Image (cartoon, rainbow, N blue to C red; front, side, top):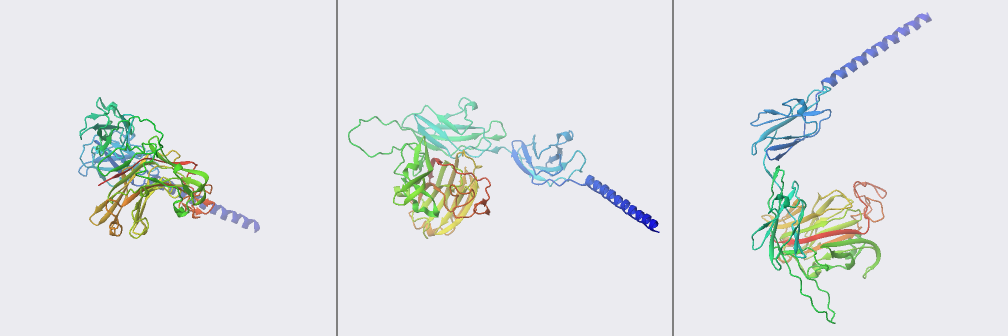
Length: 525
């Protein structure tokens, strides 16, 4: 009896194991069959860039796909395929250029994912996307600056995406009689700088720059707005007397149009008719850590440098500070600018968690008054938004009426040149503030309650201009403290204060830190 029971138990276990094996085998077969018959996902995220007689197509990659079929045609029909000559002509990446098209004709484009190893079947074609090939015009050149040095004009401008060379034209009396490519396009500059020679002293020239692309995919862009620059003959030598005179500033700045202001910092001294260099702590607002001194501001080699330093100094009537920096304001020089127009700056803005460079306008009645305002054209809170500057409006006593951040470059210890501007203009329902970074839209705001500040100051003298760089403060990091920790004790990007704040893309400031400014302009509407 025990032997029989033991034998029966063996048969029961054997039957169970056999059944389990069959179930696993069937499941594996079903899974293999399911995998073999599974379709690829439908292509999404299709974007098309028109070019001359071509369409440049991009899309999101599909998991499991090793190539894609593109089809296109007109009038709702698909008469052309990327694999018309065989699958080897299908793209294996998520981009494809369709050539041989007619400009100004609308095409339908559709894409399907494929897998040539037959692990998966072909995916469905995407919905059709319509696009029209055309000659794409390059952007207009912006930020043109002309400096007169040693009998030549040094011209610089913002680079234009897609341009591989530029044409410079110049002349007098409103006519352009000279071109950089007068002898052929090979004489056009390929970078964003050019030197004009053979000029006549004491003569006004008009200078304009146009972007070009010689490979034919893009046609030339429009010429920039004219810049009028003046050649100034060297001052005659004078005999030195025993009388000691206060230093004066000789202005050789180009004039664009009447009522236009431009400072390109070409002289070795600050133009005291336009700027006051601060020597104070500016109230230590926002718990900033710097003393502002004239020694931290210097125009050299054609640009203005505002330098933040780590140094202990007795700040004039305000106690001892461990950091110094610089501030230029036009208010104390008695210089105010009209209510409407464009204010622009070209600068290299430093990246670092402990510094706060800025370019801003203050209303004649003050920044926080109920009948005042503040226009922050550019502030850089590096620790909070690395690589993105912030434009902010504080209007009629209300803080942060408008605020937007805009990308300008990836964090780097070697920043590049960029432009920031605001155009303030009346519109049908109020006053519009249009911000630009490198000539591109960086946000706008229409103030429908503008009378609270616009009617309280002269129209021809509403704003002053301020340039400065703070150290530390509530909205920036503190030198020597953990990266990502703000002066107000919170984390800039999240995390746990004080020692475990997020540090994504945040760079540490290495003192001294330089904020370099090429020019500041005001242009009337």
